[in-house]
Length: 279
Length: 262
Image (cartoon, rainbow over all chains, first blue to last red; front, side, top):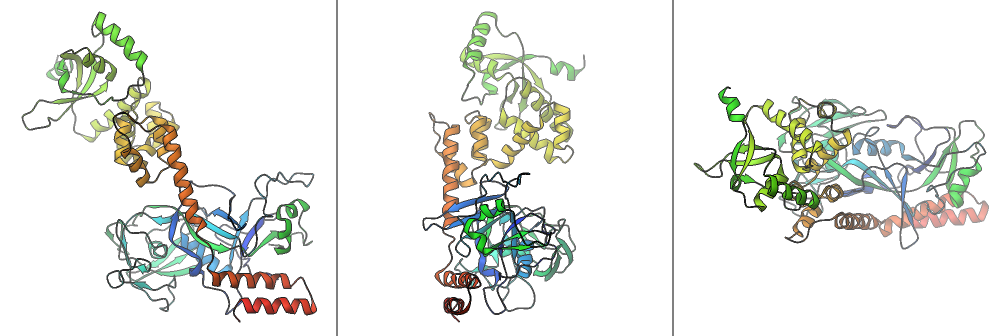
């Protein structure tokens, strides 16, 4: 009934029994748009610090967006999160409040009845979305090979319009969100392994996927050397992805296909856009 | 006594050579009581100074205050010519820098706070790579919260703001709020200060609020393009179609296909 959500292990682990998830699934083959179309470029700096749960943002037209934080503990880099979603769809647990013994829930701020699937957006924030230093990257073409992301990157001198994806960022330029893929080859983290790297490309492995990126020419004023020590780049939090909220999923592994009435109450009419999964 | 010990004995230093950066003095009562005491009884306790290089080659040494800024301030108010001081021997080794940094933290937190000096001391110790935050806490008795706060101030405040924290023009509360501002807003807020106006906690909170609104306005602009809206509406209708049967279902599926441009 709903767009597919992969149930394999994700960067944040397996889905939990009793968990409610906001989802943006994969479109049927030949339909939909590539994940690159949903990337916020340049990223929007987030100045409020990390937060748990969700924040709601209501618009004049009545649409309510959900803002969520993606922790670097599970997804050390922005491409780790996006590449997993490219393969499995996006699925993020949302708080439901404490389920009490009598079956009621302390609702608190967790009221999803005002959200409208496909009108509401899921806006994702990551602590390493905004590059704060200069960099130089290789040219690329959206149709080249198997490296990601699938964008075309121009030489800045030939295409001065900074609305395009540029190969270099000076001190006063906006960073390009898609540079995060190349820059992710500079430093390994738990959950973000650099399997191999050369002066041209790197092979990245996460708990849920593997992908290839081009390696940068230079970052933070230092030339990239695949044999050299990791280059530390300074990042700041920012909004990097803007997905349509497609549906909700509730995980109930008892096989009954049911969800508690208290959870249904949080969803309101969105119960019509909610499926119950065993995992 | 050795020559070094002799050099450490308190001596009279010309007040014009002592740099006093205290601009805003919130402790009016202390200064008033101290002034009365010094007027009547003279200077009872030596201040502690550290010698700095002269501004110009061949010029007189300058001194910065390690301990006793209120006494120096009162002495200048009273138009004294000199002040009795113990002058720290200048060591140029890293170990000497680290010892001075530790002493700054211990002295200031016990006596009078100078956030800027304390923050610089924490920065020196952490940057050396020889001390962790926990080790600084253990060796100075300063709490973990304060050490982390000082660390944040040194790293997170732009130089124009940090210098004003150091001089006392910006107090702790306002400085902590300003940490939430991006560099541009910090600089702009500091630029608004003049001889009479300082940055208060309220000013900083207003700037934080403005920053938040600007950020949320940018997020508000993240709306789907009309083509995307139609496609997504098509998906939504397709989902709803699954709840119907027969002719109604087909009508909805046809509508979904049209919206997706099929």
